[in-house]
Length: 211
Image (cartoon, rainbow, N blue to C red; front, top):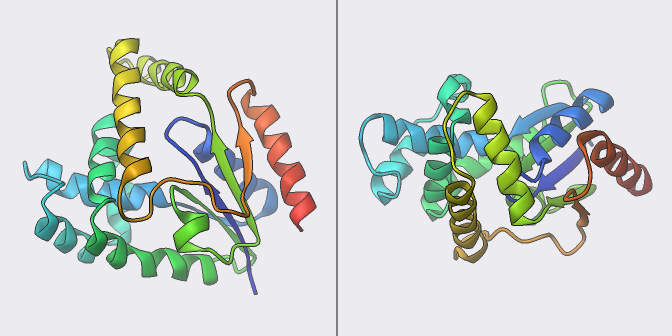
């Protein structure tokens, strides 16, 4: 039976960087589940369609292929917003759930899997041996996102980034299907005052105690 590490948390809390580092250290396969939803949302957005359209979003989810996850624009903020919209649609979640669970149960390397997202520990892999909920204050997360956008050469204003992040948090936390909440047995890791190396060390300690 493979080892599954589920990492959840809000945007810009550092869970993606942490998940990739953990997978590399442990020799596990990594799946950024957020890209799955971003890919569905962007299939519609690129065509000028509304990601919140239920029928269109469900069709895009059913037609999704692994190649769609390699699109370079999936890291853009537009993709994040589109993902948040399609992720609230039950039919989309159902279409993508099997893909995620299969990856976790049968990772390509066969050793273990690290999945990060917003409902891995609560919905996708409730049986995961290790569950982390990585979070940080919304102000700190907005600062990180602003820096990330500026490093990409994109103009951004802190107040706008903060407002967008609060709106996204509200939508993700209060959606009817799989809201963004820590699993009851998840270890909460607040990275507000931690750099990447400190967060990585703290996560390794948690994983060590669980294993």
